[in-house]
Length: 174
Image (cartoon, rainbow, N blue to C red; front, side, top):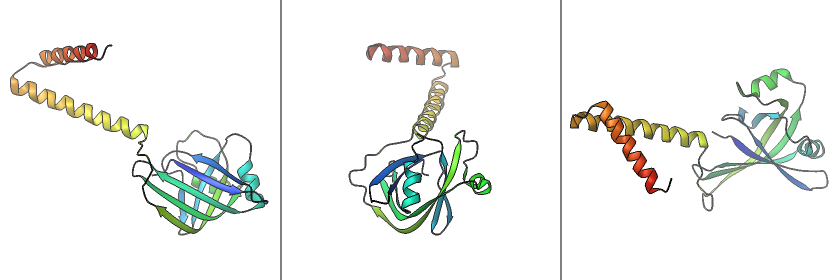
């Protein structure tokens, strides 16, 4: 699920501007078959996107899924919605500590998906931490099973692991 998107707008003279928008997983919400909405959080206080949309509603969303090496391009129109507490509550991610200022609604008129060529594969830190945690738990279970099969006590197995870790650290120059 998306945690990051790039929103492109242009002012009334056609001068383009692109701005990153982000939030927790699921901050972008599909409202109907043509509309995406999100709470727009307090940021750099420049309000360039907001000003551009007041002059020119044409907008573009660029979404990149680095893990799966996919990108989606969405063309359409966008508008800023202020002072709509009900809509803001619907779009505000639960338990997210950012301060929402307004809502941006994006109406999709066209979309396209690109090939994965030249998209570097990257992973979210939380996904990496979860995978490493699972790996560590699996190693622990396997070490316990090896120790059990060898008839080594738990204390002796822990001491052997500590010795192996110390040797690995010394070999790495720590």
